[in-house]
Image (tube, helix red, strand yellow):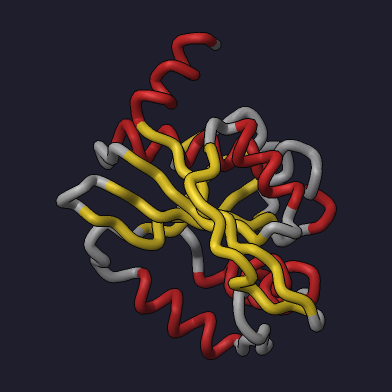
Length: 182
């Protein structure tokens, strides 16, 4: 387990899956996470994902985000892909419980995840993608030190409109400098 000021990153438990399905099937959350058509997921699909991700996955790892104060499972984050040659990891994060949105829980969880990736996995660069309409996430990522590396124009189609897919990243040396200033 890894601790922040507001959250704990822990292993995902089978007991989390029902709530995870509810979070991931929420219309607002689906819009923010899925670049394609957002089909609802079933418990069986989530269970298969859980079982597949419980095995050794060459660096991929997923965490449940839990509120430190109440022990409530509020979302998830993790390393979705690792290139061990270049030491680049691609990550994802979501806060599914809307009661915890906009209160710093995502930022805290991301800071814990970044520290884990740089200090425990010895990664040199962390990258992610975010949809241009997800201003709350972009603000969070910038606060954690991510910068825009590129913009994939009109890459996302949601609600009858095209949106950009923004590629952001943070380098280990940039993160080291941020930590020293604090």
